[in-house]
Amino acid sequence: MTDFDDNGLWRKQVRFFGRLRARWVLRSAQIGRGVCVTGPIVLDNRGTLQVGRNVTFLGGMIPTAITVRAGASMRIGEESLFNYGAVIEVAHSFTVGKRCMFASMVQIRSADGAGGDIVVGDDVWVAHGAVLSPGVTIGEGSVVAAGSVVVSDVPAHSLALGAPARAMPLDALGRRAGTAPDVRTPLRPAQAAGQLLGGLS
Amino acid sequence: MNCFDLVRQRAVDACTRLRLWRCSEVGSGTRALGRLWIRGGGRIVLGRNVLLDGRAAPIELHATRGAVIEIGDDVIVRGGCSIEATDNVKIGGASVLEPFVKIIDNQFHPLRGDRHQRPPSVKVCVEQGVRIGEHAILLPGACVQAGARIGPHSVISRRVPKAAFVAGNPPRAVHAAAAQ
Image (tube, each protein chain N blue to C red):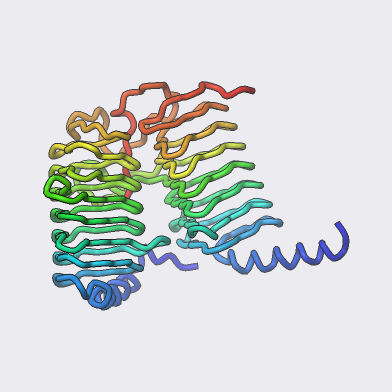
């Protein structure tokens, strides 16, 4: 059995064919150099869709669905990454900053009118299964934890967690980022949300 | 079981084993339906009478090199479930994973600092007779003990005691221990 995850040559081939695929799949969009699509995308673009340099759409078991309605605009910044199964529906405007990461099965729906716009700043990480409601702004460097439902604005450099999501500064988190959670302590009702770190690619 | 049934059972087992050629071990009576995404160079061990029901949506089993996914006997995995292991994910016997459950044992990115550095993995353990509701997410360090129930759309990253019913995001214990 082969593991393609750490095989440089295979990865280069995937990126090469991904760029060709992006030319075809995103032919109704304005795409920058090096845009790579490595899986199925269901794209319905009736407005404007701008995809920046080196944006990657990863493939997976479920296709990514992007719908841009007539007159709506969607802009994706450089080097952002979308994993599989994302559902993005743009009715008015949706803006993504640079170097953002959107995990699998993320749901983003913007409503009609200027009040329903969604803005995501630079270096934002939206984890698996998170939902962004219409009219939400996410500040740069923030993290939306796995499975959260964001209904209000998230300030910069904070962690939004839970359904509905509450934001806390990333600097205020007690333990070092990415370390093992405390497995021995049993789960209590109304536990401190900071102890429950969510997120994944 | 008569002779005909036995032959049929063996034939089904052989076909399933061929379909699951990427798995290291497959027990007898295991059935694989619909679409399956089995990837990575790790070990995937399926017990007996496992049902992988990928008819409604595909099932993803991804064990990176050196990782182990162990699925016990009589487990039901519904469509859209995704199990990603970089170290060890263990699912005990007679558990049920409802549609679109996600189980991972690595966060893949740190919250702060260089986003491209992978944090250390923490094992995920689901014990026997657990029921995990649809769209629930088990994060690294989740340890669901025997007979517990996880509500739909919950996000779990720590220990859930025996026979408890836990739901929500952030999760709360609805019952400390369900009726015994």
